Length: 111
Image 1: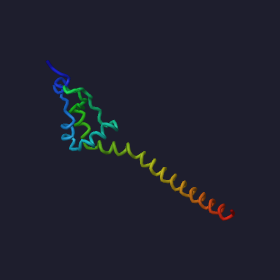
Image 2: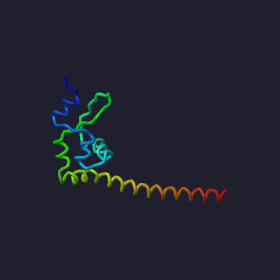
Image 3: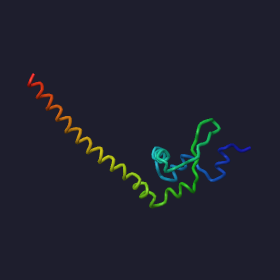
Image 4: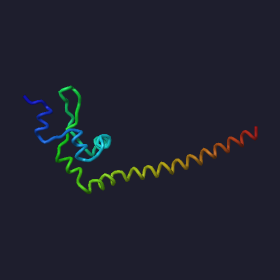
């Protein structure tokens, strides 16, 4: 009698820890890859009732291939544009704050 875990292992899937070892990445990094959508493991219930990730070995090998990092870098470039925009906005807001402070000083002097 096979459980869901055994059936999945028989199909070539590997555990979260094994995936970390295969990718040579920390558990936190692999978790980030999952959260960002770069990895899509199966979520299954273990015998203990907890949810576990199971990865397809072929997907991990494909993910690990050279050149994949460049693809991920391209995806983060728009974020750097957003950061630059937000930095410009902060400068504008700082100028506005300084103008308001100066206006407040002038008002206090007049009173």
